[in-house]
Length: 261
Ligand SMILES: NC(=O)c1ccc[n+]([C@@H]2O[C@H](COP(=O)([O-])OP(=O)(O)OC[C@H]3O[C@@H](n4cnc5c(N)ncnc54)[C@H](O)[C@@H]3O)[C@@H](O)[C@H]2O)c1
Picture 1 (cartoon, rainbow, N blue to C red):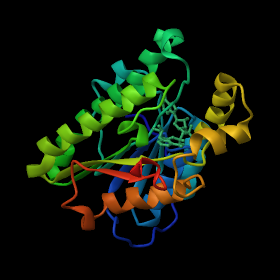
Picture 2 (cartoon, rainbow, N blue to C red):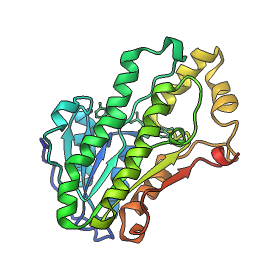
Picture 3 (cartoon, protein in one colour):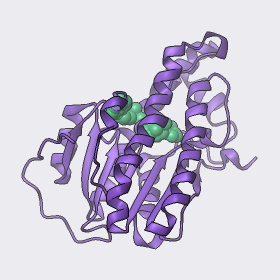
């Protein structure tokens, strides 16, 4: 794995994740960056993996971790990877919104490659080390759309449902060897990905971005606000710790009640 060394490493406070090495994909922005900060704040050494090399480098320097500049769509390169990680957060994701009959097949394939195939290959690359150490935490950033569907999101909903299956198989195989695997399932989180979706949905439905938020994104939600990235990160950090040792094969919804109906 090619990593660039971070700037002078600050002394990390001792914390519940001290001595653990965490790899966070899509760690340069949005939910991934919040996860990287939360894990580092609890003492983990964090590798920020992202195609945004500058963003990953800046955050890694801030956290005293490492940056891994990687395009996870290049899945061939992941087939021979050895990944040293005690904690793997499969978070990198993208979204394309389109009616099924117009859905660009290449967009569909790209989303499966980044959000199902890459997590599979990273888990595959990390498990031998985790098994050797008798400890591992795989945390897959899924979505409410891993458990429910919405129109116009065929590729994303398909990929997240696939990730849920991958996570459960990982849990079953890893359970006896100290490795847990879980999904976190946020509703709409305040990140650039959602800001782009607001614009896309406005175009598809022919309404304003404000109307998309009120009439489409949060209509089903009991709590009428976006989830904050730090709220998702706190759940991820809990799953990474020793307290969650009996939690595996689960999916943790954080959606303000959206899926309670
Ligand atoms: N934002 C939401 O409302 C929301 C809700 C539920 C689930 N999620 C999931 O959370 C995850 C993160 O979403 P986000 O909103 O923080 O997105 P984001 O767009 O803010 O950040 C995604 C990060 O992934 C990186 N990335 C994208 N493609 C990559 C590639 N090919 N290789 C390496 N890195 C790549 C980007 O550079 C970016 O740093 C995704 O899996 C998404 O599906 C998001």
